[in-house]
Image 1: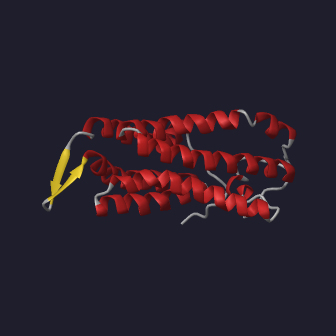
Image 2 (image 1 turned 180 degrees about the vertical axis):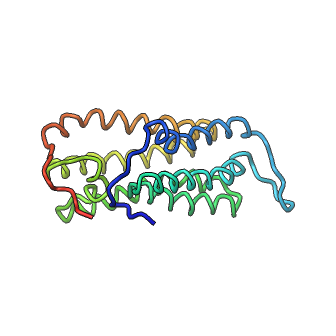
Length: 208
C-alpha cells in the first residue's frame, strides 16, 4: 500500500474533484430525496438519514482509497476523517441513532483543536505535520496559522453542536456538507497575506 508521504502521482483535476467532492454531493442529493422514507430491516425501522449514511460510508471510503491508489498518497487529514466516518457512521447505523453521525464533525473539530492547542503549549506547530505537504511556510508562519486554525476548529465544533441540536436535520446536512466547506475556503482566502509573508520554498519538507 502506498505511503501517505510518497511523492504524489499526477491525476486529472476533474477526476480528483469527483473523488473528493462527488461522494459529499451525492450524499446530500440522495438524502434530500430519501429523508422522509423509512426502511424496515429485521423488524427495525431506519430513517432516511441512517439509510443514506449506511449506503454512502463505503462510497466515501472507496473514493479515498481510489484517490490513494491513483496518486500514491493521501492527506493525513483524510485518513483521520475516514477513521471518524467509520466510527461514528458505523455506530449510527448499528445503534440506529443519527445523532451520533451528527456528532462526528464536532469530534473531528474538537480533536484537531485540542491536539493543536497541546502543540502550541509545547511551542510546536503540529499543524505542520498535517499540512506541510500542501503549504510551504517558515516556522513563524506555521505558528500563526496554527493559532488561527485552532480558533477556527473550536468555533466550528461549537457551530456544529448549535446547528444539529437546534435546527432541522435537512438544515444540518446542508450546513455541514455545503456551508462549512465554504467557510473554511473563505478562512484560507483571508490567510493569503500570511502565506505570502511567511512562505518557504526551501527544502523544509520532510523527506520520505
